Image (cartoon, rainbow, N blue to C red; front, side, top):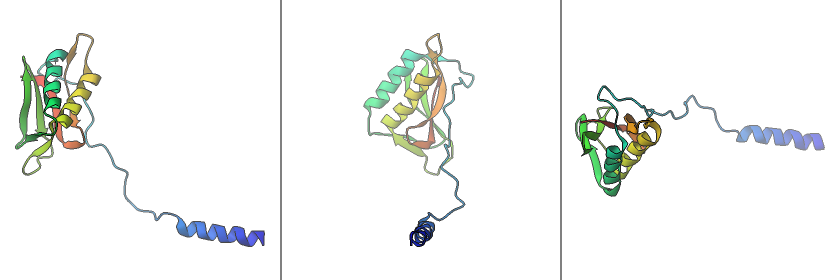
Length: 135
């Protein structure tokens, strides 16, 4: 009797198993990079001023209607956005999400001299890439 129950449980378990599919797990579409794209690293204070400005814009739209847009400038530092997938109509995110992407650059890419440069996806949107560069 015990063996019959065990075999019944094995049969039931095999019928409840999740179906197999040929899909791959989700993959990141853009990795944060720490590089200056030839414009040189920028003072963190200038970049942070822009991040704070963008964060304060909150749920306003920060859009890139074509290929590139400047979201903020402070001194000779700019935070830009790029529509890297060339989506028709552009790419956009909430300004606070652009700020989150830029803050991650500051947190990860600041060097020992208090300078920063890099690129990252806007929070939750790998179609819009945020960069900290020289104007």
